[in-house]
Amino acid sequence: MIMIDKALVICCPSCESSHIIHYGRTNKGTERFHCMDCNKTWSDYLKRECPSIVELVEEYLLGETYRQLQEKYHLSSHHLNERIRCFLSHLPNWECFIDLCVPKNRDSRLIHLFGLEFNCYDHEINDHKMYLALAVDAISTLVLGFEIGNIGSDDIWYYLLDRLNCRGIICPIFLSTSLPQIDDALKLIFPQSTQLTNYYRYVYDRDLQKRVKLTKETDRLLTEAFASYQNVIKPQFREYSFMFKEKNMRDILQLSRNYFVQRLETRITTRTLRRIEGLKEHFIERFKGFRILKDDPFPLVNGWIAQSMLQPLDFGFSRLSLYMQIPVNTFFKDFSENKLPEKMNFDERSDEMRKFVIEIAIRGLQISNFILPKEEAFW
Image 1 (cartoon, rainbow, N blue to C red):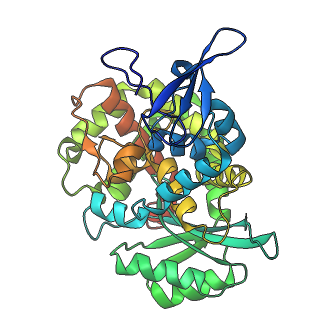
Image 2: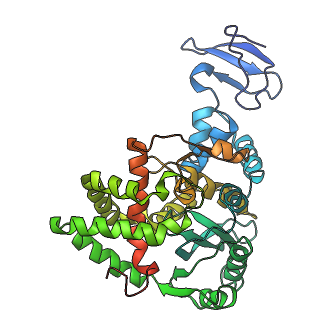
Image 3: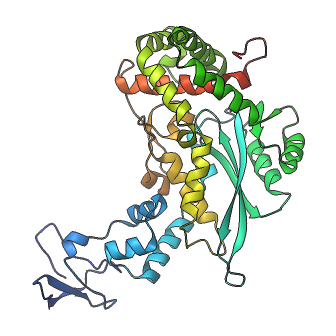
């Protein structure tokens, strides 16, 4: 064992053994070390300290390739593959984790249903197409559930929607591309719900984009945001304190007019990055580089979804925090240990709480026309 000082012990970056010996120096004079357990040799250890397995997996999920991680931390391809694969296979199930975080029988006001194709490496045919079905809460863009299957399978959507129903997630309206498989599964599992196509959302987005540029429309948009809070969002608040008070919500919106308009315009003009489209693009782009899928893609898909849903967005809070409708700390490390998020104790008048409340109001405004009765809608 080699000790740099009383607090720091050098361990092998490959097997984490502390059975280390000095192994001379490089031509540049950098000290070399040798692991007696795995026979790995390396130099300049303090500048290339291997992260914890949680950090390593998170880097991989965020976009680092195997080759980049190998060069960065001097890990062998085999060792890196085994560590990441083992860690992912022991992660909690994302759907079960959501159910632990959120009270039972929470209604989602609007759910997006969409599917994505991706390649799952197979030893025999080398290129095997798989299909991922996703159910996404419209306000928070949180993945509520997912199902993986072969291309062309008629049961994927049935299994996903049936599981949502069994978990107590009830929704009055579903938005989809109107695939026959989705239509049949919805009629069977959620016969009382309404199904709309994505066309309706594009029309409303285009209308909002025109209105947000008109100064005279600001007051009306604020009024509609407050109305959406009353009709779309407030029914979901069952336990949480001050946002029940309508006066607080109205005051926050009125005192933050400029930020409200700026944030609404940002979300509309960059919707391909910040809404459902952004989630699709993020998945497609990332899964091109994965080389760990092979026979069972579930652990990797489950881990990627969890990391994406727990990562803070540009306004400072995660999708899970928005879905829970309360500011909470969400970390991938806590998820890996099945620890529930901790509430963030912000003052009601704090800038953080103001951003959180306005974000929820704007997202409610963006889906309000799908939820409200026709005579109350803002078309």
